[in-house]
Amino acid sequence: MNLLVQLVLSFVGATTAAVLFTVPRRSLLWCGALGSIAWFTALGLTQKGLAPAAADFVAAFVVAVGAEACARLQQTPVPCFAAPGVIPLVPGISAYRAMYALVNGQYPQGQSLAFQTFMMAAAIAAGLVLAGSIYHAVRRSKTDLKVEGSGTVAGG
Amino acid sequence: MVLADGLKLHEVADLLTLAGRLLLGAGAEIFRVEETLTRMGHACGVESVDVLCTPTGITYTLVHDTETLTRVVATRIRGLHLATVVDVNAISRGLEAGELSPQRAAQALERLKSRPRQYPVVVAGAARGLSSACWALLLGGTWADFVPALLTAFPVHFVHDRTARLMPEFLAIFLASLVGTAAAMAMAAMSPALHRGALVIGVIIPLVPGTALTGAVRNLIAGDLVSGVTVAADALLQAAAIAAGVACTLAIVRGQL
Image (tube, rainbow over all chains, first blue to last red; front, side):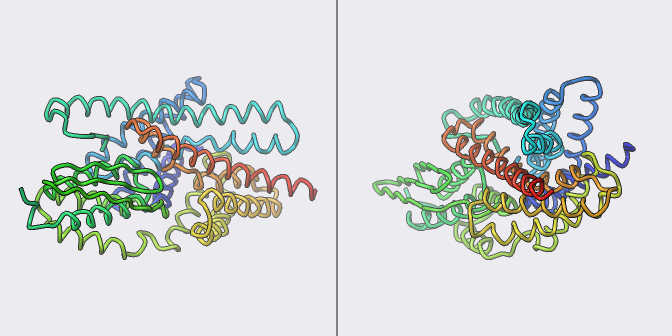
């Protein structure tokens, strides 16, 4: 499929997912942009020969960094951007194929597809964790220098 | 030492209860509830504020001079509403910056409580349709699948919207996934030009628990293991519910053929 069409579809697909997540209106277009970035990052890396799970890991990391930046820019919680942003990475195809194989009694194939799905989902979570914890650590070290022991400080 | 604007400690507690209920009910991360309430308490001039939040309730203790006040607020997540989280955050920031008096903040929070949903059901349904169509196309479909994928979203949205308030989220998602897959299979059976797999994928992608996943991750990063694991379990249950819905329909259809 044409790249421009893919750009439009991934943008609209992520924006509409953001509507379903009840993201405020002024943040919707940013969610769409993050969705397109996620889609093309994962696509590009897969075409370069990276395993799908590895591509999802990197793409989720990129989305999480973008979501932290958007959150700071718009004074809006990070999940508003991160949740729709990772939607393009969701392993829908392998999840469906796994279910199909399992229901049809093709257990070895179903098992490996299910495991692949699980690996991709875990990779998305790992990408989010890595970006989030780096951001958290940086922010923590900055606030600790400014105010000593000001109670719990957690990510914005 | 007196509290700001001649406030009583119980009035501060009422304000925190209101904000906490709104935040937790709208599906905010647990650490956000704790942090926001702590900040609001300090902004009102309370010397010591300790908040403990879980997915089903909030406990806090306010200590000021010789007075101590502890409250347990039992509440639960009533459905995702990120826009409310954003607005409560803005009110809390205004209170901290001194732009809002505690009374004004309480009024603003009360208004949030009774406001309508950010997106009407029709808009959300249309969004689900477009989303389904886009992902069906990107994940293995062709242009022929666009309109059928759009149409499958409406039974899904109807079922999810009607059942979400009656049962836990993962059961509502199971039913929605079941109905959606059935609709997709029925569409695919009508024309050989359609891709059954792409239509089903279009149904399941917008059901994916994205906010539960990110919420779990963020709770864990913040060091909140109890809430992190609870929310992660919720995300897993929802994902399993989608898979179970698809599998049930596939199994039934297979038995028919």
